[in-house]
Image 1 (cartoon, rainbow, N blue to C red):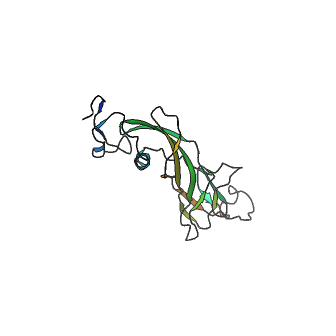
Image 2: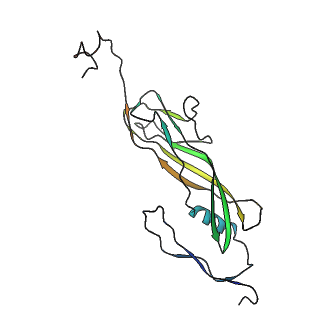
Image 3: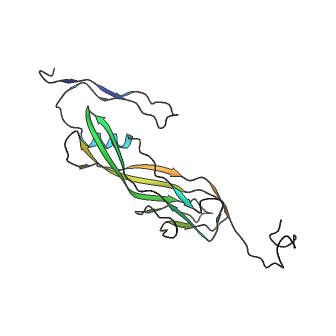
Amino acid sequence: MCGLAEVVLPWWRRVRESEDAAWSAWEMVADLRCAGGAEPSADQVLREFRRLPLTPSSLAVQPGAGPVLVQMETIAYTDPAPQVLSTTLLGVPVRFTVSPVAFTWDFGADGGEGAPFTTSSPGHPYPDQDVSYTYRHVGTGQVRLTTTWAATYTVASDPTVREVPGMATTTSTSDPFEIVELRAHLVAGPCSRYPDGPGCD
C-alpha cells in the first residue's frame, strides 16, 4: 500500500492521572499509514495538548500556618514557570511549551460575599502581594486556583514554532484553614495573676 515508503504501524495510547490511578481504556490515536504523510492538524494538536499530564500550579497561602483573621488580608500566589512536554502524534514527535496566561482565584463563599476573580498576575508573597482577599465572616476557608494555560509547539525536527489553537486548565486547592476573629480586651494584668480575666482560659 505504501510502495517504497516505510509503513508506520498503528499507534495506541492509554493514560492515567497519577501513579495510583487506574489506566484508561486503550484508544487508537493513529491508524496504519505510510511514512512521510501529512503532519498532525491543528485540531489534533489541540486535542493532544488537552490530554497532556500538565502539572497543576503550586498554591501558597499566607499566613502559611494556623488560622487567618477576619478583616485582615489572606494572600495567595503561585509559581508561573512554564512546562515543556513531549509526545508522539500520528507517529510524529511533537514538543509543547506550555505557559500560564490567567489565574482564577476562589477564596470561598465567605457568607455570600466572596466571588472568584481572575488576574494575569500569579500573585506574590508578602510584602509585595497583589492577590489577596479579606474575609468578613468566621468559619472554614479554602483557596482554589484555576490556571489557564496556552501553548506553542514544534513538530519533529522543524524549528518552526506554532501556537496551539486553544487553552487547557488545571486546578489547585489549598488545605482548609480556620477563619477566626480576635477581640482586644483591657485587662488588669497577666492571666497568671488574673486567671478569670477576659481571654484567660
